[in-house]
Length: 189
Image 1 (spheres, one colour):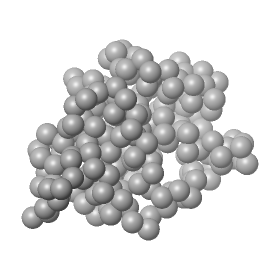
Image 2 (image 1 turned 120 degrees about the vertical axis):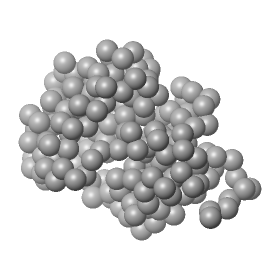
Image 3 (image 1 turned 45 degrees about the vertical axis):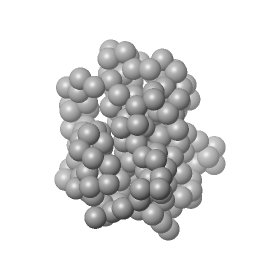
């Protein structure tokens, strides 16, 4: 049983992601992996007061990127948060990047929860922002280093943008996401 009653849920989530990602650095920008999660949580915190949604945003990468799973999140933060994190996590049983992204797009198209879409938009915006330094140094060679076909990446980020717009995702989040897509791929549609 994880007991941490002296903190509110947001503080517990930040503490948890720092512990879960301890020593893990992003290979792209060499930042601590928890930094990305904190930025996504902060972006969502600007658009909602829901503790569950904010907490899930901070924890969005736990299932995909750490040893912790659904049960760990449920024990610490409850089933609502664990369900959100699970729904927005990619299925890593698909080993090819493009197959994983196609499955993710298929699931997200069916999502009826705008909060989940907003978290995904904030997450993918931060992904693209983290690529900027590498892009400044290497230009379009970045995609080879990331082991991603540029046209596949353009399809994925644009497809998510289209879903976000169709589902009326938060305008502030989608505008920022659109700027990043345009920076890398010329336009968002």
